Amino acid sequence: MPLLFLLGAGLWLYLSQAKKFLETMSFTFSDIRLDAKPTLASGLTKVFLKIKVAIKNSSSFQGKLLNMHLDIYYQGKLISTINQNESVQFNPLSTTTALIPVTLSTVNAAGTLVTIIKNLIEDSTNTPELTFKGYADVTAGRMVVNEKRKLSL
Image (cartoon, one colour):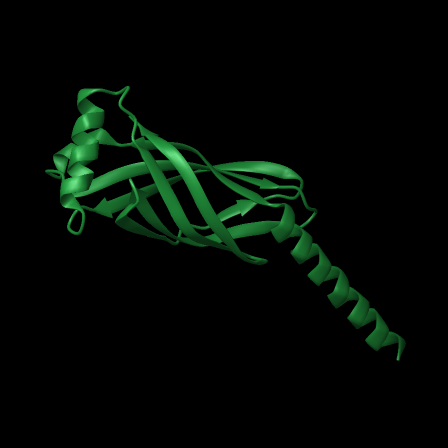
């Protein structure tokens, strides 16, 4: 009987830490940059971005970003989708910054993406706002992502 109690208490402690982890963790895009050289070299058939993600973990639970699925919107219009499977480890009670390379195809939203890129390259102060909606899977579960950020060179 004491063994069952210890197992139950251990499971309860783990689940409560995992819940706290998901409730207190924040996932923020701190910077989104167009990688202009490979984008232009592709003839604008692909858009290369570097997304700097800040992961703040206020819990004592160590975790890992396993993958992301994000839809990208510009002026309310879906322009692309990111399916990223790059794993990022983050420590308890810390903020981890990761640079995640992303490649977008311009096939489905070629006109919109090309316009955004050309305007940005011609005038770097013309920074379009992109909205990212979707989810990020981490070791303790799934986090909803709903971020607006400006794209820069």
